[in-house]
Length: 382
Ligand SMILES: NC(=O)c1ccc[n+]([C@@H]2O[C@H](COP(=O)([O-])OP(=O)(O)OC[C@H]3O[C@@H](n4cnc5c(N)ncnc54)[C@H](OP(=O)(O)O)[C@@H]3O)[C@@H](O)[C@H]2O)c1
Image (cartoon, rainbow, N blue to C red; front, side, top):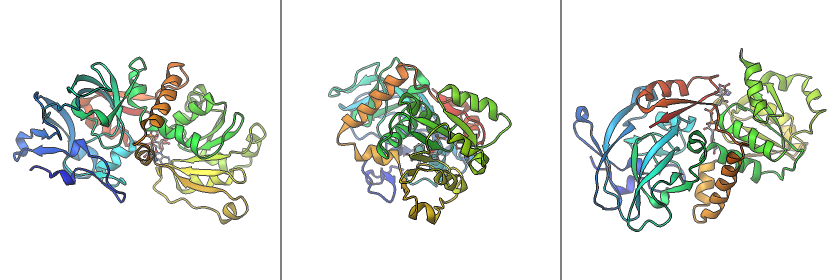
């Protein structure tokens, strides 16, 4: 089966603007001899195979994802051959495999939307990259759970290769999301306060650190668990001002906390449901709540009084859309990556707590990525 080029896009309600490299797959008819060819948009000379974590239908990730060999296409003049180094398993990767995410690749598809790769060969007309460079995808849908890939030069952006591997592998989605949400919605000054739920998530840990670097207070809400004190200490060690349990948001003792820092101008909601409503209750008059995730799979309920008497703004953010909106001017994306890498180099932004897993142990990693209360990101090491 050769997938026609016009289907090679992420299906979404918005216009498809970018090709989806991992969907460019020419499948062997023989499932048992499941060699898969990766058909390139450009012609060249060399061909190799690589290992991929591929899914042919939507469903439970541990049932649908398989390790399969894929033929790499020749390297075109404006292509690069990369060796993937490390790639995380994020909630959106899981949702894509389940078929529940806002954008879905045509099947079969290689899993994974972010990760860091090293350039090992460049096409004759490539001028922005050289052998040895570290690169990350510019957009979602590149299919990063693989050992090698032939990619268009324009599909990736370089990073300094002196930052820690796990920082590079997890930089393109969560820290960028945290950076934009702290920059684009409220004019936050040193001493201001941000409140967030899912504070132990990848996004949450980046919010804590970027806010701390800007001397912004953070009130970090997490679900209760037996090891709450240890997790609270860990988040405080990376810069959290306060760490509280979901229940505390509803208790009078929260008033004590607001004696030590101003009420939040900005609330960041990665959960939804009651948790989001509780964040809203504590916002300053005129403040904003930005929803970026819905881990509880519950709608956000906004109290009428918050809209009428507190004039709160209820907004959403999606980093994929932000990247697409800025794809014609790479300078803004580059400036953000430079600032984030500078924080990493200064030791002010570390990768989230990660569990490194070999590619062949993907099934264990996928299962672990779907467990609650783990506080660790599964990262595939190629
Ligand atoms: N909009 C965007 O641009 C954007 C960008 C990046 C990420 N996201 C979204 O942000 C969310 C977090 O992503 P991530 O990569 O940072 O996640 P992560 O590191 O895998 O962490 C998952 C977080 O979700 C919490 N959680 C899981 N199930 C929950 C539930 N039922 N109720 C409350 N909390 C729950 C976990 O808390 P426990 O430890 O208590 O289980 C943990 O804090 C996801 O929904 C992701 O899709 C959105």
